[in-house]
Length: 110
Length: 110
Image 1 (cartoon, chains in turn cyan, orange):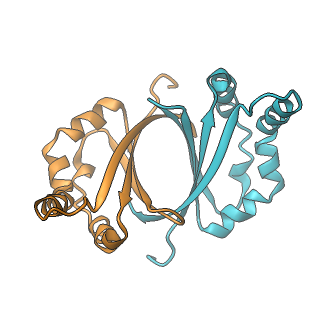
Image 2 (cartoon, chains in turn brown, purple):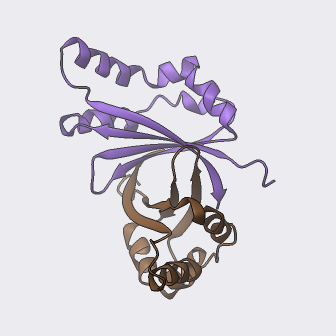
């Protein structure tokens, strides 16, 4: 059904060099909380060969499924350790160890 | 096998507004030449919801498979109509209707 094109969200995560090890550990042992959200299809975490921007690519049945995830308990559960790291850096007056920027897409072709 | 992480190439394609229709037509009727390359897994063409940068995401068994594609007859066949549009714009002294920039990644986690 061409009217029902799947939806993709990409979180572009700029990771500071001294946080890379921890960052990769967090994704290597991710909570899989997102996997329980209805309409979630799959995700990939992409490690850049050249620059410092990682991509977290998530595929969804539609935009509503993605939106319901961002306001779900699973969103908080899945980001708990990362959010704690950001909070700690803030309390200690340090730069955020990663910067996040979401962009959204529809699948035009396969 | 964690040593054999898959490889992803993303072509970031900035498309000028007056070329969007043709651009989407080309991908909607793509040649599928890439599908014949050994080591090719799948691809998605992602249409942005907000800005003008489309993403062509291709998944490969490894980096060598991707590299062999970029120097294959299938690469030229798959890009024939797009390359012709670029050539025509050049000959007519117009701006390129799209700008391409490849970045490569390894799959860190699923």
